[in-house]
Image (cartoon, rainbow, N blue to C red; front, side, top):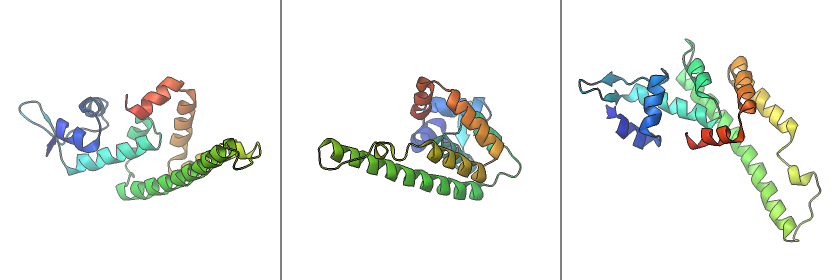
Length: 165
């Protein structure tokens, strides 16, 4: 069993984050001691890992709670899906890095780029393709709702999402 402080340090989140997850019913401790301390076991640790994977993929906490609260939620299937999503994300990041390198070389006068080359990887079609893939991998209604919420976020709220605020 691990305390909030121990688990937060291990997982790279703040103790406040774990308290918040408990408060909203997303991650309950395995045991609460007589001293009021929250203690987390392996099952809680695996659940926190899932939460962090979904957060990494851009899912809001409400959606994560909905997905993980389903009776048919399967950790192994979720991990396989996370692996697929992260692999796709990695491929997209690689394409964007090529665009960055090409642009650097263009600005140095070492490469000529067309106007469309400047925006390789940013196309609406590319974004739509990722949304459709996500709907195949996850609950389609949850993905659509998550995307709708994400698009409605301000830039500050989006930044806060990635910084854990």
